[in-house]
Amino acid sequence: MLQLSGGGRPDPDPRYGAYPQPPMRAGHLSVEYDPQPSAVREARTEVRRQLEAWGLAERGGTGDDDLVATAELLVSELATNALLHAATPFRLTLTAAHGVLRCEVADRGRRPPRVVDAGTSESGRGMFLVDALARRWGHHQDGPGTTVWFELGTCACDGCGRRQP
Image (cartoon, rainbow, N blue to C red; front, top):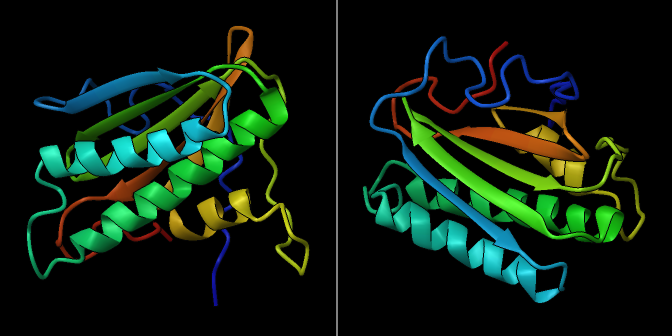
């Protein structure tokens, strides 16, 4: 059974999450998309391309394809929410450091994300999936908009990427 993390708490430090200082040798990418339906597909494609470029999809036997597929799915959900609820350009930011992949989607909407029971409805499952699959997630107000983020583990170490108790 999926456990919900209650990740709707504000991020203590929007730039670095739980890191006490900026991560060293971090991979970083930030791309802005126009509010068009094709932007969701483009963001998904960019996630796969970037994770492959960082070598996070190449190490066989460590579940890295799961990392890429999960990151693609969750970015797709956040990008779709940005299009549906903000209808403004949105920015995708990816950062990989210290065994953690952090994905952020920032838009100009002010509506905070909500986890709703997936039930049998045709929509509303996006934040439920983020809450169920991400190691951590949260959101913060960013000037005139909102940034929603999630983190996934990137290494095969025992416990890496798993939700913290």
